[in-house]
Length: 129
View 1: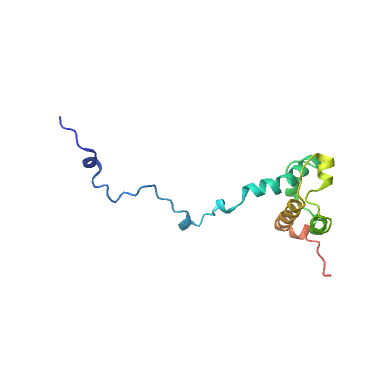
View 2: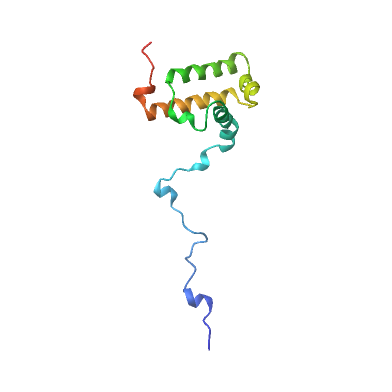
């Protein structure tokens, strides 16, 4: 019995690509490699951990009044800018969490967006100044 050679089984392999095709760009899938996960873990995670200890898991998903979050974001930003504080001393004293003030600002901004997305009529308490 004569066995065929490998190229006789599948034919001409000169046009076979060296790797499997992937059409992410054609399907418009998001490129999640653009997200800096190391910074997210470093900056945002402590803010969510503080919420977990003070309230309960995922409580932020319920939403907040926008002006409360704006005030909190400004407090953290001003502490960073004018007091030259990098980390929130209250989070460290109360929960032993090293939360960067800019991470708290990021949390507030994400939560503002979430609150307006889930229920703008309930949470958008901005006024015309």
